[in-house]
Amino acid sequence: MADTSNFLQNGYNGDVLEDLLTYTAQGNDTFREGLIHIKSGIQHKYTLPTIKLGNIIQDNVPTPTSTHGAKGSDGENEYTLTERYLEPQDFMVYLEFNPRDYEKYWRFAQPDGNLVFRELDPKIQATMLRLLMDKKNEYIGNAIWTAAKGGEASSKITAPAGGVKIGAGKEKYFDGVIKRIIDNVNATDAETVAGGQCVMSGTTELTTGEAVEAALYAMWKKCPKQIRKKASLSFIIGWDAWDAYDQYISDKQVKYSENTEVNRYRFKGKKIIPIVGIPEHTIVLGEFSTGMDSNLWMGVDYANDTEVLKVDRLQANSELFFFQMRMKMDVNIVRPAEIVVHTAYKKTE
Image 1 (cartoon, helix red, strand yellow):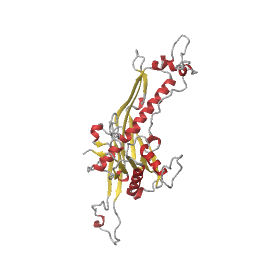
Image 2 (cartoon, helix red, strand yellow):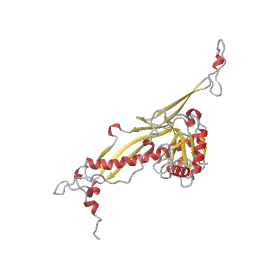
Image 3 (cartoon, one colour):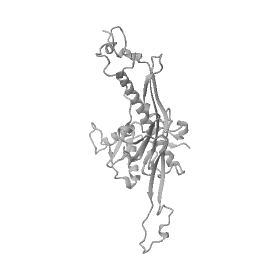
Image 4 (tube, one colour):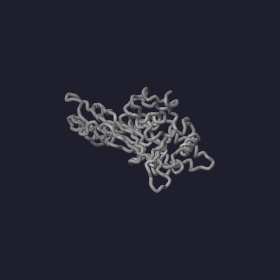
């Protein structure tokens, strides 16, 4: 048989291969699905204030007195202000590479052998930079949900068997959603419970479609009545749990859809949004959007706005190039009392 091992390298046309095939990074579903409001330009700290007014209805009297404005233990006749915060933390995107490692994918620019790599060609920059940004977004998409400031040891959260560890690896610069929720549910200090406490509807592992359906029902029953009709109210779920639920409802005697089709991403009229990033055995119900009414916010900043991304030679006598981006980031929930969660992740005892 003829040797075809060099076919791909020898069969292209043009100065630059039209596109390098890359492994598809998972991207950032939280961004793509519009589940988070992003506040940029936060250099140090940003306050997320909420205000609540207690009961103000009273018997009618000809002349109200100061006793009618008396404060009650339940917040009666009183505005209650609470504050949560975004405090973006520093981290860096950095990569060094040698363009000559990829020279076989670009033909010689001149017959005498001079390469297009004398300076880093813009087409090469675009290809390599796209992959760099994809990988950065993949990291952020996971960290939004499973990061913990200080890393895994500091998270004090026990993962279910086989589950993603909270704060593992490089997800150590800020607290993600799961850390925020579990801390809030178990806390007593005023700052952590500002805005109320999340509603925990269940803690079992979601190993079957039937278990997922039971969890969805339990979450819906505990959903605060005042937000049930909100357009952005959604169930956020992982793909494993969704696949189990999808198969379960397809196998029912009265089917929602044919086996060849995906069932509707709905429960009680509210969107079910499967995403990559949310950990196993976890479903979160709340208002999620790109608008200011979203219950999930992200604060970001660039360490130096004039040089958001550097692309340059490592040094004058080197063939190596580098990409560098310095960033600051944090996420937080805004109104914990309006979030319902089912998760098998627990506070470490």
